[in-house]
Image (cartoon, rainbow, N blue to C red; front, side, top):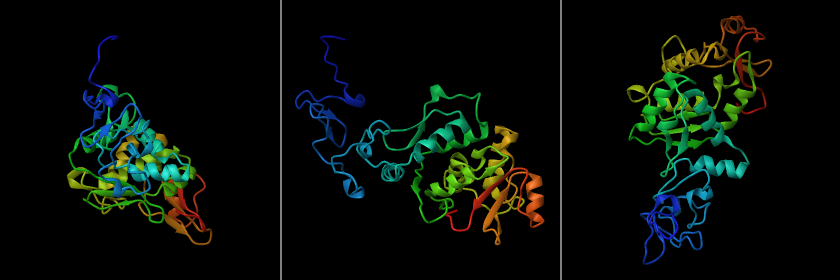
Length: 278
């Protein structure tokens, strides 16, 4: 209100009346120049940015309330360098599959706004898996992978996503919803391998040849609807003559693949073409 000097200022941090700066814990913010006069204490970890940057120079998408590390910085930096929007696509796809209003919090961690959860959309299983992971105190670092396939340290605290691999799968999905093998499913697949997965992390072994993780994700697909199909094979079946490889998501596609015929009907994903990145 007019005439009242509130001490709560930028991102709800308290203003120091003696210096005029806002107290951000490890740094002071000067609202007069719109900058931090002291460097980020972890600037040496992020040499691509000035030591005086805030939230990886992405204040509209990230909030760094304590000046410490931003776990999705790798994704932000790659998007900035490559002109891509993969981080946004991951968040949007996860939101559509879970009904959660997702955002990146002050510490660069994935969070959700409990007051905006929409339980009428998405999968209850996926929603529970993601909220349990987010609410867990264990931190898992998500990174980008350019050369390697998407993966994770099983029962560990690191996972990596090959965005080109995932985008290729989305663009080459036939008969099924293109996100059945998309950003959200890839994110959840690797997350379930880590220490944040059920029982401290799941594997790709057993369970009718598709592994523990995809068994869970097939339950998610079942809740999402028949247009998502069911993953019926873990490893893509390669056809050397054409240089293509396929993962079946319906039994007619599986029958074709088992007969050594490239699928042309049903639900399937082409994961690799000769001369292109998987």
